[in-house]
Length: 193
Image (cartoon, rainbow, N blue to C red; front, top):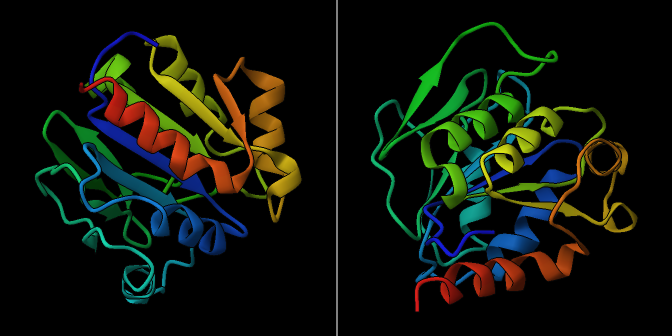
């Protein structure tokens, strides 16, 4: 990875993601130096309880993203149910475009927009899930010299999604779930010194 400060960490997950997100967010400091945007597959009728639930496990502010929300370091933004979440330079946008791979929010859409906006200053993290969403987006992050991390499939509640990424692209790191937050902390703080 180029020695550039990380501006955004994008995380994608599906089946089993709730538990995985708790582990990661619990272990990141409120002084985390980059913004975090998350696409978690969920039913379109879901309400805001996901952000409230995850907030219990994190010292960082967590909210459902709203259109044109400004990106702030140390803040966590969740894709609302039934919306694609896109990263623009400095802010977020929402879209009701057609589902991608049957998913809205789509992990691919989030990852690709982050790569297009922040290039090598993007870190993509693909976690547990039962489909291939996120593989194409992670490939885009790799193509712009961003950093790619995939959960070790043996630690995933459903290994399909991380295995698909590992088989499709040369990822930078394959990490057990418990090692992802410490690695992100090291990666994001070390390049700012």
